[in-house]
Image 1 (cartoon, protein in one colour):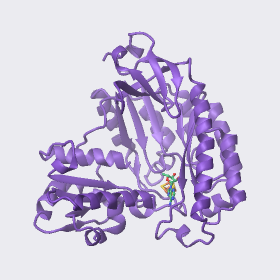
Image 2 (tube, rainbow, N blue to C red):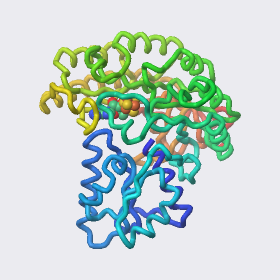
Image 3 (cartoon, rainbow, N blue to C red):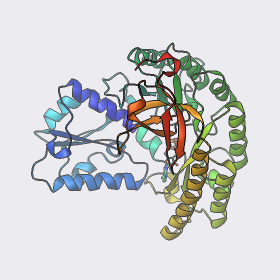
Length: 427
Ligand code: 5AD
Ligand code: SF4
């Protein structure tokens, strides 16, 4: 979601005549769009601001995003290089704010609930794939999470607006959309009428010309069979589900206020795999939540083995001020947290490696996203959201069929099967 907000920041600045430069030292304006989910994300921002402070010459420095919502003018007090702190909700007036803050430092944060930036100009990450928010904010109260406080309650966009945006994107040549929400599955609950995520997903999948529809993030409590039915039945709905489990211990899940049990989660993924053949399932896990005993952790480790996720993002619990978990007893020591983290990451790496190697020798339709970070390869994604690196020379169209030739730790290698394009897509 933050990356998509950054596409709007770039869009607004570009419309006002700004152009990107290749390094911060050449910039007239530097905008930090920040995340507050874990302390480490905030620490990186302070580090980057510190690095800018050591330069004599620098442009206007602005900070927005979750840290701006959480800390407001405290950011101006703590870092003397910051000229402007602003809410993404006032993004439309960023060019004027930049002019004003050149005279005196400013903090323009306010009611995040009024934020409606969906219709602002956008500079997208690529020509063929696009993020489309379906809702902003979150109505859940997961005990560890700062998101509801910084992004406000859930506000769903009208479904006609979302479908119209997808139609426009298709008109511009986009082949894949990723529908975004903190909890996409609860989409529509705040709208009058009977909009549900399942009906929205079906409508988006049926937009003429869209070839792939993905979405994230799913909450196990709100992922109903109606959604799985659409995923299994609509050809453009991709076989990809990112559904954080967070813990394998019922005691910790209850303390986290997640609203499901370990067995409930395991049953749900069994249903999902049955209803959506070939599903790629990924998850998030937190280790070291307050009160997590060795037994609780072992339940998580056991769930990881049992669930056999295609990938899992493991996080060290990070205490966030103002969240219910911040005042819970039973802090897990740092070394113990790290021990659990390392063990779980090692275990999941093996499972991820196995899941990737199962794809070697298969044919996959991939969407080319752009140059890979290293070498002269292209980076592409399967319908299951797996990264595939392919040689640039034999790709003529954005949606080629490739043969998977090798599996690395986190990505696949592939070669184009022939030079014709899948589904008649010309380059
Ligand atoms: N500490 C560690 N991880 C967290 N997450 C959210 N809040 C915290 C926290 N306080 C993780 C969850 C979520 C992902 C986006 O970030 O696993 O799914
Ligand atoms: Fe945070 Fe829970 Fe909402 Fe996800 S569902 S954003 S973890 S409160």
